[in-house]
Image 1 (cartoon, rainbow, N blue to C red):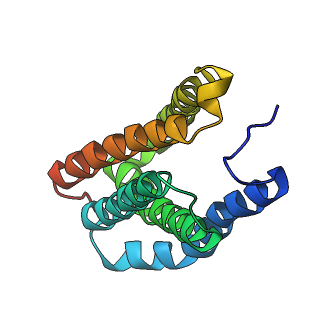
Image 2: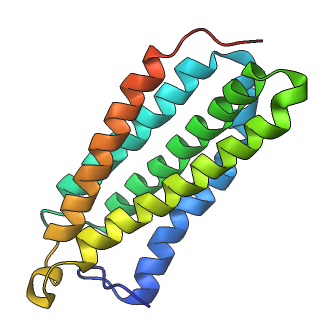
Length: 168
């Protein structure tokens, strides 16, 4: 199964998408070090806010033909935002559980994370693959999916900032 990215060959789209994985992978290490120094609530919220801003920039870029630099920059920011969110958020979840309940807490966390990934993927595919072929040739479904994801990240940022103090 493949999806066409407006104005890009499949190999170019794959290379562009690889930027997310590379930037996230590079960010995990220093994300962990930052999580040891700063509040999980602030770091997670900053990561989600960065992710949301990158999605908004990407949505605006879909109005025309985004350059490789713009697309890659937005995707790199998404990768970094993901890393900044995940590490401290996981730390906050695991540190809030008692030692005898950490296995269960991690299983629930992992299940919810995987379910969220599946629902998010289904949502994006429904938006992008749902329209007719004529509409799919335009950037409109991609922009719609990106705006929906931006809104979800913006709500997540507010909820992340609203959470209580971190357990140590």
